[in-house]
Length: 312
Image (cartoon, rainbow, N blue to C red):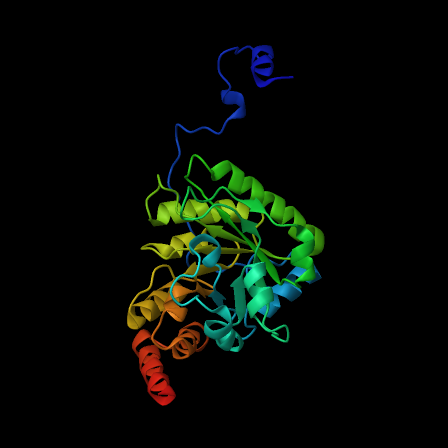
């Protein structure tokens, strides 16, 4: 039975309001329980008390059990941008950093071709692929689930283009399908929030996009830091990691990581702010100092400078 016919049966042949969310009275949330931590009595990461052993085991590979946080190294940029600066040679630029990250996030092609198979760091596999920066981005499809399993992925990642009228629906559908696969094989799924072209880069947008990821079954959400980020984190029931975004001066990147952690983020998934640094190895160690050891930005920057000088 079609929706118009159902509406007619209910005595309203012209309006389908019975079946749509009420958009006339959306109110911004104002009770985020910022002083009430999520229940982690059955597992040390929030939102995962009720997940199965496989999901928890894989999440425990990604998130340090002492700090409860992660330093993910993202190098999946090439499937959109090609050989961007710092990613010309994954075998030379990324592979030497691998052991200093908690998790590697990349595409199947680069991982297979350029990361040694004896790497023991967990893999967050980029499992959606599609258009590049040369056309309209985000028209993506998913790779075969068999490939993620054969690569021993500890997590699978896909993007959601919330706020982009042309691609929001297909990316949410892709993501929901990926969660189905993840639930079937006990593999966590990370939702990556793209910035919809019609949405502002603010806490309201990132809070909405992050919550959509979680509502659709994400075990991890990757989003951008912004003012009011504590509300974004509080309203997302699973761990949130921040994207590094464009290359910043090292001290600013460390401040970004520190501020996100102070707001409740469970780590970072940084790429350009590590591999485009003048001293990538020193930088990833400095970021880890902020994320795991509680270093303040200046302390971490001093560590970066020391390690950079020692490497010369």
